[in-house]
Amino acid sequence: MTNSSGKALTNAEKQQRYRERQKQSGKKELRGYLTPEALTCYEEIQKKTEWSDSILLSNAIRLMYAAHKCGQVGILNSWLTEHKR
Image 1 (cartoon, rainbow, N blue to C red):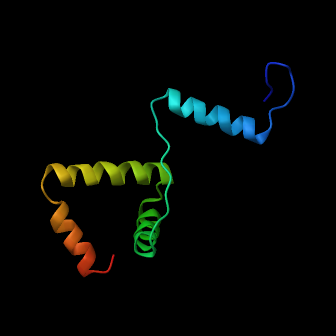
Image 2 (cartoon, rainbow, N blue to C red):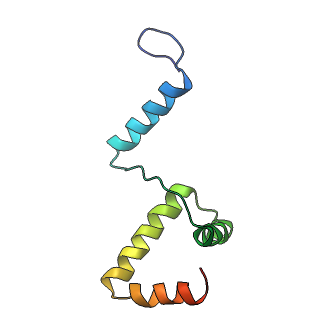
């Protein structure tokens, strides 16, 4: 891959172009750190589904939203607490 001057792109330039294309397609980058409990859940779900981090995060947020809209967040949070997840 080359830039407009004909020189090969650096890794940083390639990453910037990738991030820009993702933004243009309507995607938003989220970053954060997982608690040990969340990491355990993540690893189990990732092994079972083989989803990428992006798909896993998108689905997690969509499911959380559905739980919120159905009034189930409290019940699910209680289950997580009881099961140390």
